Amino acid sequence: MTWWSVVRFLHVLSAALWVGGQLTVSLVVLPLARRLLDPERRAVVLNAVGRRFGVFTAAVFLPVQIGTGVAMAWHKGVTWASLAEPGYGRILVAKLALFCAVMAAAGAHGLASSKGLPGLARTMAVAALVGSVGIIVLAAALPAT
Image 1 (spheres, rainbow, N blue to C red):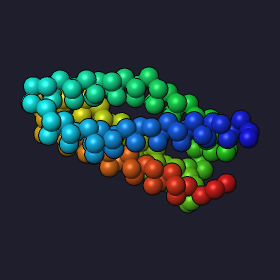
Image 2: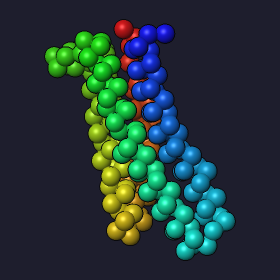
Image 3: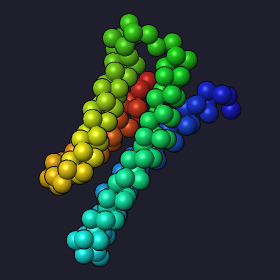
Image 4: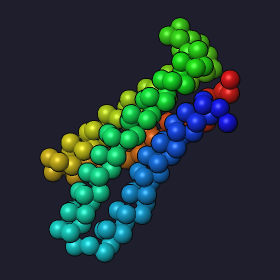
């Protein structure tokens, strides 16, 4: 195993934990909270889960994703010009653009939640989740180099 295998592993692990966490909250925690908790307790629990997940995202996910992503791009010789080339470059650009959109949606979700706008918060959460799955699809589509 090389150093770059470890870097790629950390990148994939961090992405899996973040997207897996979103799926777990959406598909397991939310339905159970809706069914088992009264509205007041549900709000407290889901707010705490959201805050903790947000802290995890800011403290762990983003630094690992950005750091390992930049390192892997440098190692693969990605240049600004190569991002316009068909194949790896264009897929990477699409992945990065979607990543930025997902981060914006996740931020908007947190803001809408804190401002008491549940409809907007739900829409932004779904957008972030769908976008996150799209990032995984694009990552899998990157040609091996």
